[in-house]
Length: 577
Image (cartoon, rainbow, N blue to C red; front, side, top):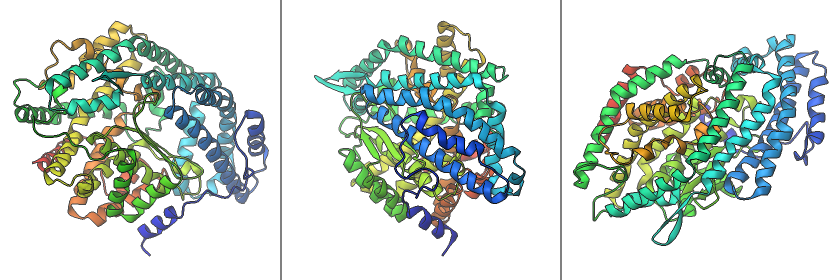
């Protein structure tokens, strides 16, 4: 049996592990019932390597149980933001339980690094884990515990506010995600009307979201100051474990996007303008098709999307399809958009059971297909890393996690005939995906550069925030889309990016990973079996290797220089034709 086959076999035999430390029926309810397990780990003798390894396994089990509990609280709340009981359960964990865990976590981290038997552990296997533990010890401050709790609760308010946003079109109420399908309609006047309605609805909550963001900035800045950093950006880079690249690398990425990507975006937009027969391309035109050509509709409802995706994954590799089937049996999907549901989409790993949860807001559009296979790629990563023996080994960097998802968007294109019976539609869908690979880069650079400025200047005014956003947005915008008369909508366009509220500084990862995904797709075009084998091999390592090593395992360069970006953009342009 090949190494890849061994990995697939281990991941496919998924079952909830037998607990050896906590009782099988234990459920997290309050700190009083949970604390004894942390006390045990805090006081237990660690006089031999065997005792240390058993202690690590028990700590891993406890971490998995607590992590899965908190994840379910978040999942349930995002699925129904109007349910106060679910919101209270989420808040209870982050305000009453998580703050009690953090001092214990710090003490356990210190026990680990100070124990003489830690040196006897396999240093290659444990290197990245121990490096992360030392960094957490370095960054831990008691004063930040309540700030983490407050920021977690505040961050989730973004979903509560956004989940209530709806517009009326032709007498029917739609979430903003559902309303987006009208922007594909051949009727230009309808597209414009819906575009303006969506923007006006966002305007109603712009002050509330500005206020929420200001509160989060103040809390995050205080965390950084408490830890001895000049600003939250520098603190967050350390906290995210960005050992392998710097803020200067991010700035170079921004410049490369301006030089080598924006001209391609302008070319794509000019092609759309000509296809639509327009004098100027307006924001409500970018997703449209000419009159007489129906918008791409790859599925009818959430179940149809899931069924087709499972078959698509089967065709790529039967193991991939099995992962989604396992999730389906376990009820790990919530796919369709509805009022009261948080915006966006995610794959949430569930540390103990191993099968993750996929959340999204499908409304029948081409972009929903992309989101589904993207989150499906994350799910495959969850399955492949689950056999690793410690929960912390499965804590892989986001820069490789997004390679897992973005590569799947490209790999699956060979099998999209399951979604499109018409060859012309299939060609359009492929073109849409490859265009998206290019057009996502300027938005990534915009959001990332905005975050750098926000946290370098935490005491900025709302007017300065608006002006800087518009300045950065213009810097990375193609002039091929005419926004005249709509400038007031652009001024708060950043508010639709939930990452700014919920997961600060998590966005450059998409750009780094998109480069990796393009690299894997280049491999795939030459040798499909080898590319998929590299993909599986890299993802199965979880977080047990450094980022450059994980990329090397996938046959990739960890590189986002101008020269490399130019090479990859040339490849995608040639694929587009």
